[in-house]
Image 1 (tube, rainbow, N blue to C red):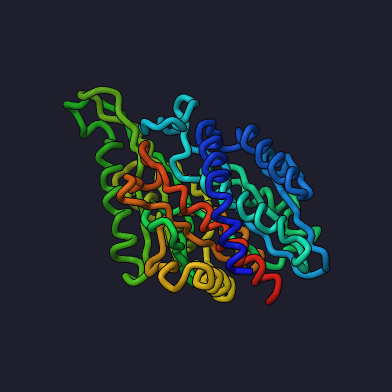
Image 2 (image 1 turned 90 degrees about the vertical axis):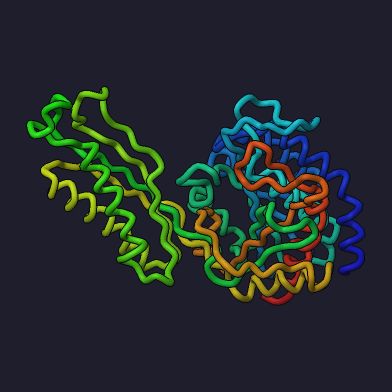
Amino acid sequence: MPKSLMKDAEALAKKLSRIRRQIHMYPETAYEEKRTAKFVAETLRGIGLEVTTGVAKTGVVGLLRGVDRGKTVAMRADMDALPITEQNDVPYRSRVDGKMHACGHDGNTTSMLGVAMLLAKRRKKIAGNVKFLFQPSEEAPPGGALPMIKEGVLTKPKVDAIIGVHVDPSIAAGRIGLRVGPMMAAADNFDFAVTGEATHGAKPHLGVDAIALSAQVIQALQTIPSRRINPVHPVVVTLGTIKGGYRRNVIADRVEVEGTARTLHAKDRTSVEKMIRQTVAQVTKSGGGGYEYSYERGYPILTCDPRMTDIVRRASIELLGKRSVVEIDEPSMGGEDFAYFVNEVPGTMLRLGTMNKKKGFTYPWHHPKFDLDEDGLWMGAAIMARAALICLDEL
């Protein structure tokens, strides 16, 4: 099985490259993935899968039923692109102004289609089911994972385990990254406005300076991760935008700030939410001003199940050797809505290496020159296909 799987996967290399480039040329942002979804659905139908479209607006679900009854493992890939103008000078560069696959979701989708092709060829040897989830809107919270779950993608048949994939430009092509436990942070958003009293810039004592007051709030917020949270627990409080003021000689009466909070422990997430509100309220009150505030919880902490991670690790070692696995030592403070899936069923996410320094594939996610070594796609497809088969044998 391993040898034939690798042989079949390598035989798909050129086809997967063509697929990836086709998707790359026509990027679609959150909930616009109609062209991509149509292509995915047609591809899955073409290899004999049962296909459902329009899931969570533009999502696609493909079901591969084995010849015998058994468990069901789900495989998830996201499809959306980013509102970024591509700067790569390649024949397959984005043909849509202001949009590109700068995070590699074209690679995620392509590698998962490769998994479907490999397993469809082995249908007669499969006991159980493999459900392929092609998800919209990972890049735009509240994301597409939760709507897909609410529409029943983890039922009929009931999903017993799940594997997700995301390309990683920091890992060499031909290798995968794995981690047990927290892999990505909870990602929450908050907004607040500091309100004061406008007056002439030459007479600040007659007003309440919202700009000066907001500066105090901003400084105070940075003491949350540095002084109020256990120092061995990673916490990020980032303020990304600040808007206020009218002109140089007017004391501003309103400043608006947007921020994000990232945590890797559930208790810290609750504490930080309370501390941000408390800080904004107390600092503005001490300066004679007021405030408006809102906090929205985003993607939860992505925690990888030990058993599922071990299955993927074994699959990779079996096909490509021990050096094919990179153990990810530190979690990322980025967010990923695959977390919703692993909150429902045991699961893990593998980071599919796509870096190749010799070919110039070194730019990070969300960079306008992001690109990937496509040799990683067929290798990733083989690993995930093997992992799915191990799951069905051992669950």
